[in-house]
Image 1 (cartoon, rainbow, N blue to C red):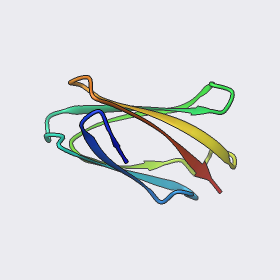
Image 2: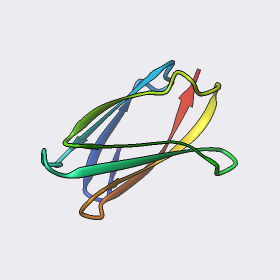
Image 3: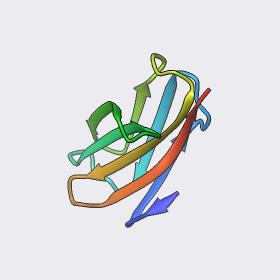
Length: 85
C-alpha cells in the first residue's frame, strides 16, 4: 500500500491477534500514530510508536472489518481496511 509518500505494509490481512505495520521512509525518531475504527466509525483501539515497524496486539477485538488511520508526525497519512478473523 502506498499513500502520501509512505510505502506501508500491514500484515497479515486478515489477522487473528497481531497486526504488523511496516512503514518505509520513517526515521527511528519519528512518531507514528494509528487509530482503529469499526465500520460504525467508533474508535476501538489506538497505538503509537517511533520508527518504521510495530506489532499491535489486537486479539481482544471481535471479528469484523476495521478501518485504520495512520499518521506520521510530519503529516504523512495512510488509511486502509483490515479484517479480524
